[in-house]
Length: 176
Image (cartoon, rainbow, N blue to C red; front, side, top):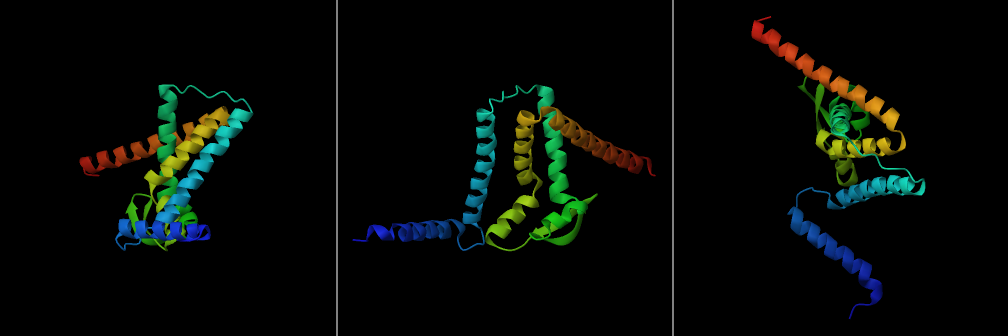
């Protein structure tokens, strides 16, 4: 019978076996993803606890607030994950591959383990969007006016981007 002291070793072996069975030998850093989920949960729990301790009232978002935050989340997530100017933030986790779309880079994730998991997060606007929308929600609790101003600015930028694309399409249609 194994000693109780062997429990952590047995648990680790079981987790590794399950991970190997899941990944089938592919480079898929389950442990790093679990760590990222832990950081995300902590990033929600800390502001929630602070809001409770400081007796902050939770906002009751209107449909306009949701649209404003959606536009801001969209624009900021693309700025973080795809913009050439923010590539120094992604450089430790990604490899430059070229351009993918107007003012957007194509990058490959590099590394393994936590480095790969962070690379997947910071190069994916869908992944980054979840963290950004959570930050905006926290901002609506602790600094609603400043958060609305920042969200309005980012949403205006997203609308401007759409107008740029529409203009280019109209120019191409007109043969310019």
